[in-house]
Image (cartoon, rainbow, N blue to C red; front, side):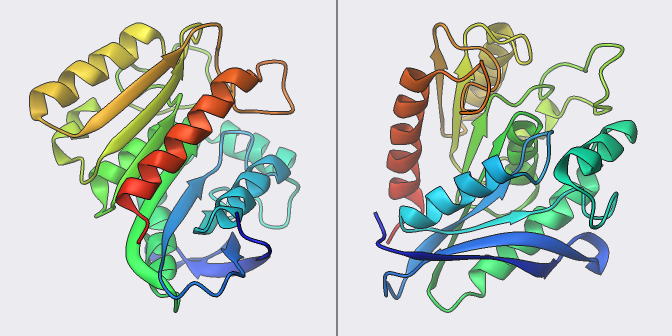
Length: 248
């Protein structure tokens, strides 16, 4: 663990050359070469909980950057209002997401202490987007935390308007870690099993873990869905995974 870190709001160049807001956290440990992580926030948005996760990566030795995916939709708005505006539009368009994550990865690779390796992690809608980014960009490691609608289409009435992206699995550019809940409805264990099967057939390196007694959003410490035993194991798997593919 790092004794200190620096965290601040910056601007980065995202999709289409747009300047967007992002949250950067970097360890103050004097290390001259480190891996980096793009953190993709959940559907509730660019909030304090996901900023805390971004700082957690810095405390564990990684430069971490979270782009505000809703910045164009409601610049200057509170996370709740920006998320509501984005939901009303059906969520973040896939093409824009890839551009914003690509801009974040470029920024991280340009940091003085970067070793050139960049991973991505996402929660909820961000889990799907982590998989999307890893199939669309040259990355070194990807983590999908209960990302739905990779395999199936959202049901009628759900605000997220996206299409399945399992067809992109052949383009997965890096190893994938998946962390899921056995009681989750989005995605269900059947959906994650189908993704596992497809990746196996394609020979794509991946490891999936499904936690009994956990549903959706089990990483969220401020929700009733929080499951500390699953989270503790999940974080250790993340550190082992990124330690293998990003560190050094």
